[in-house]
Every structure is written in C-alpha cells, then in structure tokens.
Image 1 (cartoon, helix red, strand yellow):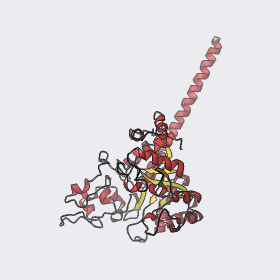
Image 2: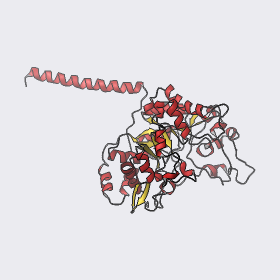
Image 3: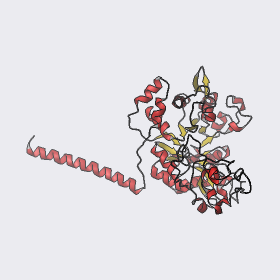
Image 4: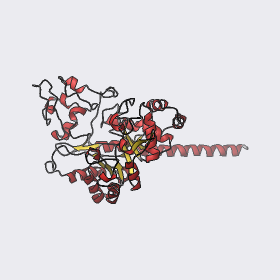
Length: 420
C-alpha cells in the first residue's frame, strides 16, 4: 500500500469511528434528555438454582445450555407488584428490582386516597400490613378501625385504608413486606411477621408511590405498564367519585403523561370496567386485561364450560382480547403430566390471548405449592418443577405473559426459548 493510500485508509477509518461515536453519544444524549435509565439485565443465582433443581430431562438440558448467554428484557416477564418476593410491594425499590431482572412490563395496582388521588397499593385497605402507618400515631388514629390497645389482641380487627388519609399523608409512609400477626400483643410483633420464604433484608427503605409517580418511573425505566384498577373497599360513589370516573381517571393519567395506549395494559376483575374502557377508550380497551376471579363464585367450575357466565365466546364478542386467570386454572394433570386445561383450550378457541399469575409467590414447592398450584400439586414436589409448569404455560397453553414476584425466573426462561 502506498503512503498516500495508507493515509487515506487511516482517515476513512478515523471518520467512521468518530461518526459511530457521535451517533452513540447523540443516542445517549437523547436518552438522558428524556430521562431514560438504561438498566442491564441481571438475573442473580435463583433461575440457575431452579434449573439445576429440575429432574433430568430434555428441557433441563435446553435451559442449562443457555446459562452463559446475555439476557435481555422481555414483555413475557411481568413484574407482579414489582419484585414482591423480597422487596416491599408497590415501592420504587421493588419496581426497579423487577426491571433489573428483565421485566418488560410492571404493575401498579391502583386505588385512591381520601382526596381521590390515585396511588399504588394492592388493596385499598392494606396499609396496616404493607406500610408503617401504625407506627405513626396521628395516622393510625385515622384508620377505619384503629388498634384497640384496651384489648389483649389490639390488632385483631385493625384496618387502615388509603381512603382514610390524604395523598400527602400517604406519601409520608414507608412500604414494608406484606405481613401481619393479628394475634400479636405488641406493635413490634404485629409488624414483624414476614413469612420465612421472604425476607426483610430490603425493607429498610420502601418508597411508596402515587400512580402518577409510577408512570414517570416506568417511562424512565423504559418498560410497559399494567395498572390494575382495584375494587373499592368503600361504598361507591365515594364523596361523588363514581366507579366510571375512577376507571377514567386511571387512564387519563397515562394520557396526561404522554404514554401511548399500546404501552399500557389496564386490568380489572370487574368486567364492567373492561367494557367501559372498550366503549370509551378503545385504544386502551383493545388490550385491557380481564382478570378472571370467578373461582370465588360457588356456581363456577373452571372444568365445566356450562358454568361459565359469560362464556369465552361471549367475552370475545364483547370485545375482550385478553383474559388472565390464576395459573392453576390453565393446567391439569393427565397421565402424570401437566397439560392445558379445558378452560385454557376454550379461551384459545375463542381467540382470547392469555396472561397468568403468579409465579414465585408460594415459597418452597416441596409440599405441592399451595393455592397457585392446586391442580398440579400431586406432582409438584421440588422448586425446579416451576420451570416445567412455565414451559407448559408458554408452549402448550400459549400464554403471552406471566406475572411473577421474582421476574428473573420468567426472564431466564423467555430468553432461553427466544420469547420476546
């Protein structure tokens, strides 16, 4: 190569490198300007532990083979209340942990305060179990049913609701692990009741959030959002605040924040909420999630379509696109194997997409896994079996997303199976 050509080659290379650097810097600058937080996915040891705990199988070999790959965020992995297995639910820290573990969608359960502001709590009346409200005398006194310190068990009937306090008062609270001991005689014993399969290690700071604050955080974390409109524990209308105004206010806060409807999956157990969104906010209603809680109805049998009202076809005809039952309703045991249930097959036949809940919420599975595994408990006997169930839900049932209290498990599986 001549000297002139050599110089020309180097010049072109330098220009190319500089252009690439400039483009990257510009992109990084855009991210900074819009407040984006780039989080690398870090799964920690749990998914690897679960895979190693599986019984010998082709699936185990397949999951083990991708242990060294680079894991990325996936919408198949949904952070249930954030990362509630170890972090205080519906707190900033819990949400950030779920995204760090690859959750592409994160949930804020939505309820309202005394001044009708929306906040993230699993239940309108769970503050006594999920926050430190009882440690703040002036707020504890405002609870619907405050502690009765004249009783031997002061906390047996205690109930503290978001509707008991203003949003400003709510923001002074600290989130804690969801736990309580109603038979406790002291406040310390009442509050320190976290199940042994969870931990208080990350509960020193639990930053509670309004719904608006959760939206801004999720925008920065660059994830999609799945708010659940929680049933009110107070009589509606509440001081003139109707159910429809409540349902509308939740979606209005996304529109005010400039969030596109395609990035929001509103949820409700109340089919009338779903129908309201379909009729009045069709862009949001198009991917509204009907949480199927009919298992609490004595007349409902998930194995008998004749007991389903509305039926799967009727739900689809009403415009429902996504149904979300608990995991156990989607599977059953046949010849010693986990297979799709009658419920799952009818949902798919009606053209409904399926999301399910909740993985990693049951502690050790050596005794069958409890409520979330009630149709498969006879063959669930070790923690690794969770991967077998997840595989059936993904491949045979065909769910499009899985809520989990520890997103890393679902993220690991989805990446291994190239589910985006």
